[in-house]
Picture (cartoon, rainbow, N blue to C red):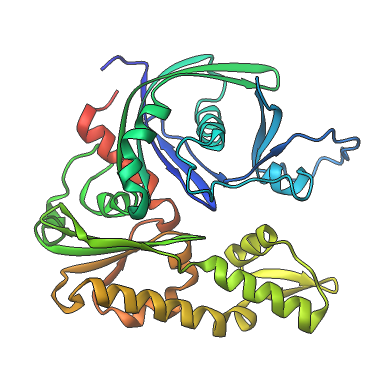
Length: 338
């Protein structure tokens, strides 16, 4: 492999886009895109926190805010997320991938990339289509900078498989000898995302499609419930993306005071965890699993409910970033380090 070839693990989630590169950089930003708005005033006080995102310039759509910048500055009703069934070929996929490339390759004008990414189990039939969509040249125009990325190889795997790979492959893509039980055994992976939960079964590292599925049980359900409680009981209105951020950090502001979300979310997260447990037990004979790997940002929110359900539960390292990290390690194993 050429020394200037970068391997990237890219997880284009419904809620968050995560990416990890062989140059040591990683990024995580909201999977949101909106037409860029002219910001008439920005305070220069030396202490503001920059929004996690950037502005892309698309030849057809014009300037676009991507990431948290879209959530904060996008016009209400114009903010888009990849929740569409046809998102594989939707331009938003290109926008999110381009933003990830730009953040991972700061200052670069050109790069050759080999890419590993994933799809939810229910959409894995679209793997070839996604592969073709991401292959080839990406001309990424930013404020004051342009970047050309040549994607020369794309591997698409079932999304939760990345989390398992973080437990059996090291940072060079080599097998971890101490992980023999996971390599040889029967392992379930639960990947709880913002809008879907993916479940896969792997036996001796072989993906068992008949015992894998996606379900429409998600943390976003709890977010909507919390939103309704806030509106009914406190007369406070929050947008869904604002509550998603609040759930990740554990608090929000009501009448000028920081309020912890534990009390509001707890009774609403319990039935979500029970639904996920029921689906896992329907798909798998849980007692025969060597391990049950929990991954995804939603698994962290549901940790107090999910862990007691499964005695062999283990968390993937950095559960929210686990798929992207595993994709990178798989790419390094397939293609070698640059």
